[in-house]
Image (cartoon, rainbow, N blue to C red; front, side):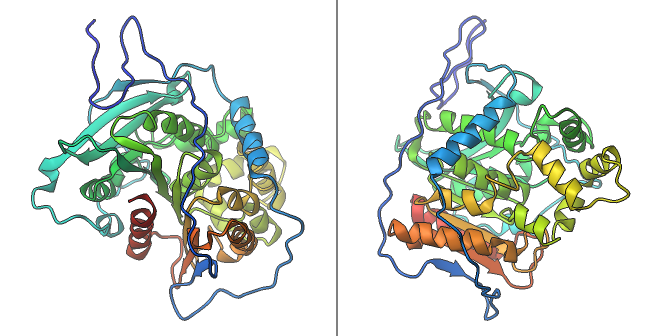
Length: 411
């Protein structure tokens, strides 16, 4: 069979022989140090989050050790390892959403700044690929990559985008087109059990319940983070991407993916999770877990029954997190993993009234992050926005702030 040669990647899949890519060491980034001043925590309004004094005991800890522990955890629940390979895919004509009715359009997605190009859609190049990150059906990562059809061979910055629960990479197209128009290579992926990786309206829910029952997968956040680490292997080898200028962002569940991928893999040079960062331990201790639990309630109901409880309580919540995402409410929670992203630029955009990601639960992560960024003299590399009056919703303001953040640090 004749091999299909992909346009940019240095990886080609053949029928009989395949050139494989092994995991490469994480790139240590040497970001320019900015003039230090007050750590950037921005509340977009005259109203402010209450400044409760909080005692932070000890130090943030060794980020590299924490990262190593997290990577070890990811490896413990992997299926058989396979060489990283890529193959062509066909464009998705009818995107699959696990919502009824499916979403149609989004003002927030359309609000992203674009370059003023009259015939933009004609000048955008689209790539559809599958990246194999491990054995098994869910080890096939679908990619949608948009960039401008330019003749020069300059390496460009890249941004990876992650969708929210029950959506898919095609939902991100307006964002991908906007970033492509501004000179980025824009990459959208289907998270585990979503989009092309789903086959029913309950695929994601069923995966969460199965994880609780069997403890062999981590469909809530962590398995997709494994894919994003493998994606970094691929992106750093592309001829059109500058491997030192790769950013990552996402909405809601995608924001969690972006947060943990930036923590886990230093090759993501800039991160901007949107409505995705929260304190899981804080939520349990302060009985603020209800909204998050309701977003994926089926797994908690299953756990409630198995634990012989009449209702979901904080014990059920804690046991579910420990089972489907070990360490999420302990060593890998926001107070430890957010500061571990230092010194790379990190923007966190949340709603001030978001009950899934309560802003009060970010006081300790914020304090520790500020301290960590100040200690390396790059306070300007950290910014937290809590948009007043906004619940769990991505807004045009958040989209614009994220766009400006990437332009500032990746261009």
